[in-house]
Length: 434
Image (cartoon, rainbow, N blue to C red):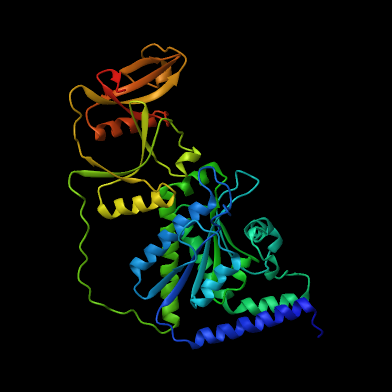
């Protein structure tokens, strides 16, 4: 059979790939190595989300997955392709996996579609089954090549060329079964967690193509869908998706150890001391002070969700997170700084600490050029409403609390009434503190 020039390249690439596999098996591994690849980064923002872009969501999830695995497994080495917002070329990601003799490579991404109602997760492995059905995803994920300096290193693959197909199948048959197994485990865990799964699929992704290990590309969901994009950008969404991937890894690792003849090592460990809350304290991360009041989806918040806003005088203070645990406090600060707020710091609150004198907290829930009467339907049943005229506008406030904790409870009640953009304002009597 006569080989064309391009197929000679594929043939020798395949031969090198198989030799690499042999050498990898020959080496005695002390640890199971998992390489976690946060897709995109730097000048490549990935898919545009309704709250946060792909590169930021997947970095947070990747780091959380890695930390969960590191905490649980002493015999697993976690390698990250990136831990900050940097641009990596696709071949570099595979090179990191191969240099570290990875036992598993997972590339984490978010999906996007022209149809804003598209919804659900899906996990891909290298393969040619139903490629045309998944062409939109592969084109988008492979388009990062256009940002790279040397695009010629990526060989074109012709699925209609029998020789190219044979070479491709030889190259990826060694790990396809294991890749599919892990992909199935991931999607199963997403479903158990209440997510909608679009299943396990195959296509040709350059980030997976040269990996000498079981490899998958996880699409967490469609971030241009309002509901799913908001969920995946939230702390809750990222945490739940990370834990689901960990559970999939738990099953995969157990099966891997069983096939490798590795028994469970029984180690007598001293009972770990359970972290206790810091008594009487609540920690939040103050990351921004501004004269401007920003909406929850404003670009200035850089994708942070569940942000608390407190107005004192003519300034707005923005807080992220709420915990009484020292470890969680430090993790929240690290996350906020990673978002780009380098001057963020921990704000410490004393629980139930009362304001002095006539000072109190009130909830601003409405601003309008209309003057509404008391108990107006516009207030959705809120009582004891204070109206203050500011220029041509009227500002409406509810409640009067002496402690920040009580103000937060009142804020939640107001938001549950439908005033999602309500926030806390500091008063002296019935006057806003200037």
